[in-house]
Amino acid sequence: MHGDLNLYETNSVVGWVCLGLFVIAYLFVATEEITKIRKSKPVILASCIIWFLVAEVAVNDHGFSKEQVESLIKHDLMDFSELLLFLLVSMTYTNALVERNVFKKIRYTLICWGLNYRQLFWLTGFIAFFLSTVANNLTTAMVMGAVVLACGKNNVEYIKLSFINIVIAANAGGVFSPFGDITTLMVWQEGKIPFAGFFVLFIPALVNFVLPAAIFSFFIPPACPVAKMEEPVKLKKGAVVIIFLFFITISISVVCEEVLYIPPFMGMMMGLALLMFASYWLKKSNKNDSSYDVFSNVRDSEWDTLLFFYGIIFCIGGLKELGYLELASHAIYDNLSFTWANVFIGVLSAVVDNIPVMLSVLEMQPPMDLTQWLLVTLTAGVGGSLLSIGSAAGVALMGQSKGLYTFIDHLKWLPVIVLGYCVSIYVHLLIASW
View 1 (cartoon, rainbow, N blue to C red):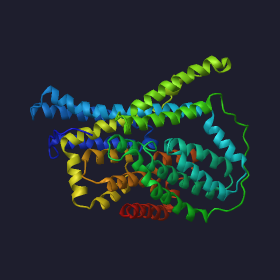
View 2 (cartoon, helix red, strand yellow):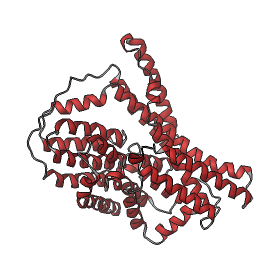
View 3 (cartoon, helix red, strand yellow):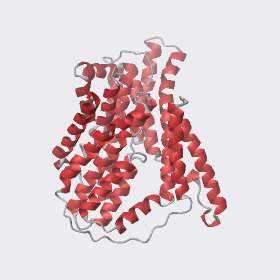
């Protein structure tokens, strides 16, 4: 995150208007399920108005030149462009795996194993934990949620606890991999934590998931569910090749960043090229599968989410130039120790999405060491599990369950989730002290 020209307009009418616009836009984001207005729409509109006002103040009140105003905007544009290209490739691969029946195959296989409720509870949790290191927590939660619903239709309590478990596991699994969550990706791209450095968070993340799960498991009966069997699922041709290419793509991105000092999105774009050639091969080698086209996977990416990132990055960038992030940094990091400040950041991410929260921390640039950057990465990731609305995984499962898993159901188990949150922080600090 960049930009060193601060307008210091936090006490001006323009500053208040911009802050109010961001708050209003985020209220629309938070109430998306009620208003049915896609989250990208209000933040894009707010970001444009905020930057119009920032530019007006910069030029007319502070005498900024054209080059200075452009440099401020281009810094935010560069941040968004890197994130956009990286995530677009990641989403394209995910869509390709969905189209090739990879996730359906996982679901069908788990259902066929005939596990009892308690075994299924642990298995779906652990799969969510590890799958979310390479797939986003939303996809992970939806796949595991489908398994739970298929097997537990006659046991509502099992569904509730399993959904809470999946939310916690998916959020925790994402924090010890740069590819596991948007926040970890941003921290890695900013160079705050090296690629291998994230693996230090594996044990704290595992504790965050396993400790609440162990308590939940006592309330799950060992009986076997009567699952509705589905039609057999077969992987489509090329599925294994695409899985292999996905891991090759991740490897290339790591080499780009760690060895060649090239931004990771370049490695991801090379992976996209490989997927395009795989798509060409599938068409030529299988006439019955000629309809498959990689560009359909690009088209089906979560564009609402990608454009939401655009709006958030430019909203926060504009507020930074007005001086609000420096003000927030002083309020949080000057009045609290780094540890308590980062614990607070995690709690805040349960109410406000962890993406703008982490983006704000990166823009603040607090002078933290590696241990503290790892801590805020941990708390921002797992803090979203404290409430069902704190992460995309929780929101998605509430919709998927059709009323079987609700905000109140999640809230009832808050003390157990908080226990996992606190112990994971303690474990991280204990490991860091060795």
